[in-house]
Image 1 (cartoon, rainbow, N blue to C red):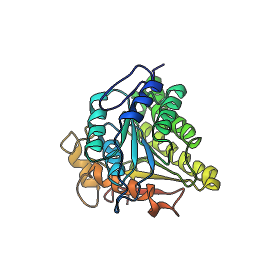
Image 2: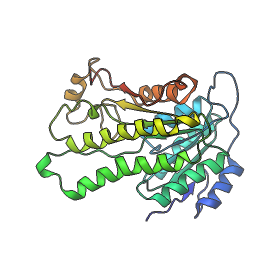
Image 3: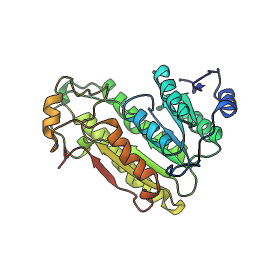
Length: 280
């Protein structure tokens, strides 16, 4: 079982509780100026150290939110994202979390909510890729992908729902392959992301009485270190989009910010394709 040891950009401690106190004492105050629609809100972004997660964390902070982000293995990159937020006048908190472990997830969520005194937005972003033909995928790979992409997303949403404020937001990052599988060998990954859509719709119904909206953003091929635009097979993926190119993490973050903000107040249970026409 991994521990939910938390880190601020400047310091690290051995327990989540002591790090929370240090974060509260040292975090800079975010501004409430005009043009920052999420001022006074607090967000948690899972897998926020790189790729789409990092872009989302930076965008929500730019919109005025205090941002907590989880990471699993890239502490240095998580600190870099947090430092960028703080350099721009925001507040950030980082925590290492094993998202398939319920105790670790609870510690991360509680730490984020306690650090900022509230939790208004969850971006359920962390996930893992998978590729392999049906006959080649073993049970170990099957369990790994479902644990991260399905169990992990469920555990985070479950823990966050207990702390989300009235009128809060949950945005889950899915994938366009849940509705359009373009190549052989993507069955496992597509299945795991299709399950996340069921989670999104079920949560939307359960949490609606509290005014909490729950939506999903389904990216197409996006230029990240997991799927670089200059990597193997990238040209074929780009050709499958109607716009003929890979997306940028910031373009996905734009849609997440819309759903997390006031613009998402009457959108719930929806999946939004941000894929350049990949699934059209």
